[in-house]
Length: 417
Image 1 (spheres, one colour):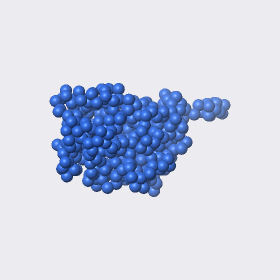
Image 2 (image 1 turned 90 degrees about the horizontal axis):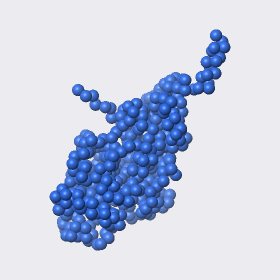
Image 3 (image 1 turned 135 degrees about the horizontal axis):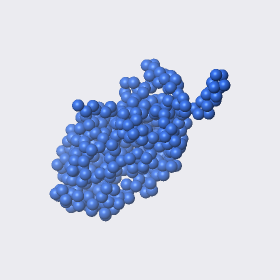
């Protein structure tokens, strides 16, 4: 009997997986690849296996049921992990749920169906190669689909849970400076407008913007970056007005457009002033929402994430999970949000000394997050080359994007009755 027990003990030492109950994926500074760790969590959810998100525990770690397949995937993706026994897991969960600590366990139930709104659906759109969300979804191996104006007009958004908008111009000004869109991109948008009997691209984009707002209000999750955040609200506020300079649509703007803006129709911003110009290459900003001008942007400027109560403010706590509390600032067509233009009730998740960078709000039954800037690891100024995330596997700026990708999974599946 003694020999048998010694043999069994030796076997356990040599094969710890025999006592394995779970796999812990730490998300603190010890993690070798934060971004691919999110992909592993999504993979488990896609396979109908639940994932525990350990809020504020070691940078927002993930706890998953042990399988040899999952352990192999961790190794293949170079993701740091720890094999956890049942007793260790129970002790860990007990310490996290202690009412005296700012931590909690949030169970993720399902993989959200993700869609990206992008002109790559209809044209080459080389500028989209630098879309941070497309880059990180591909790198983390998280599947998604792509839609553009036609699919939205057809009502396809109801097929998805989570919608991303990036550097899109919903005002019909083709990005305002015409330097980021090719002739093919412009013609593709004009063709869609003509097909659906809109006289101008601005009218097409307004209908798309309204449909996106309805998607969110109906219970969808909307995530937007860069000019997608600003131009969406500008277009909604200017419904029925001409704010497009003649260089883009052949006629002038309404001289009283500013006074006629309806801020009750916007999602996140109000009381902003339009940037209107009939110059051949007008400025980058659509409005005073964009606070990227007027102050310096040094190489070492940062914005800070707020702390929230994990047990009482679950949503913002999930959205700011990170191994760093300060994020290096980065440019975009809409680089930062003017503090004076944010609507009451919209929650600030991250801010610099003079601007907001990362905000969250509720709209009807849905929720939205707006994240300013173009590429968290991009070069200063315009971004011509895609970022190689193999060089930035631990990017805290990109982690904020992936927090939003997993966020809808915290909603429990509805029972079918």
